[in-house]
Structures are given as structure tokens and as C-alpha cells.
Length: 98
Image 1 (cartoon, rainbow, N blue to C red):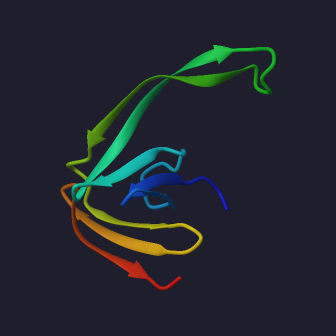
Image 2 (image 1 turned 90 degrees about the vertical axis):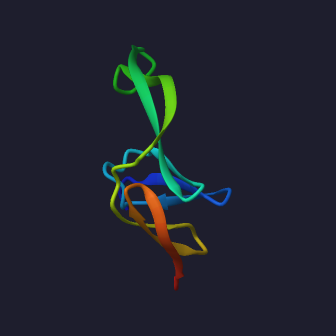
């Protein structure tokens, strides 16, 4: 199974493994552009946590990914989409058979 990222499209949330890191990051297709939620974290030590602490978000900023070229396949339990981007702009999207 492994890790994945989230992508938001038309008001719904999907999963994808086609983004760079698969760390539960958030992406969004907004006005035919690809956006990324850049979150910065700090380490918080705690004896109650399994690994002696946890990451806590300290800032979050949505950034347009104007340098992204390629395709992203994303899905939920009912539908699969394939989106093609050039310079961060959506140039084609189609629904695939599940």
C-alpha cells in the first residue's frame, strides 16, 4: 500500500502516488493550475509519544507549481482521473475506467 499524497479537485479529495514525495502532502487543481500546500513543521518532544515526540505544523502556505510538467493519476474508491500538466497548467484531464 505505502504512502500517498492528497489532491483536491472539484471540491473532492483524492489520493495519488504520482507527486514527488508521498508524505501525505496536499495538492489542489484550482482554476486549471496545480497548487501545493507548503507546510513547515517543528519537532515537539513528548514522553507520551511513541518516538519521543511529534511534528507540529507551524506555518502553511499554498504555492502555485509553475514548474511542474507531467501527469498525475488520482483516485478514490469510485473514480480514477489522469491529469496532464505543462508548466503547472492543466492541459487535459480524463476519467479512466476503474
